[in-house]
Length: 113
Image 1 (cartoon, rainbow, N blue to C red):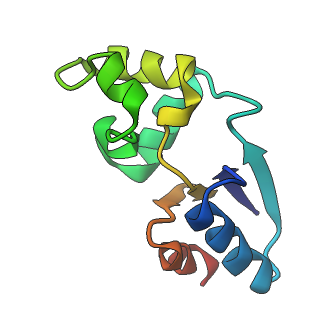
Image 2 (image 1 turned 90 degrees about the horizontal axis):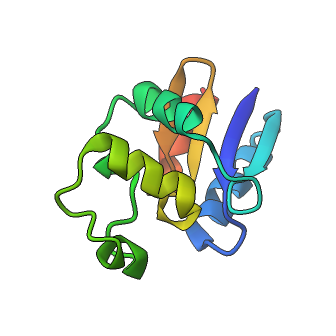
């Protein structure tokens, strides 16, 4: 079972979901802009991805600059994602204890094997 943190307005997210559907994989779609994640969920995703908080953030978004997050600590960054879900990189796909960011969408193929 896969879980995709999805934004239907994002082409990379749609392409990643399409790859999952073409593989006939069971998938739960979480539209994180409509159902924002809490801090613990974000921390779990970061742990599964084995990356820094900044690696799961859309640092080119205006909100990132407006909130002056460039030199912020991890807790501040996580809270910024909670408060502004648009800052979360997309899509993120999880399968059990494995996860990947679907940029490029083909990254998800490793989870489908």
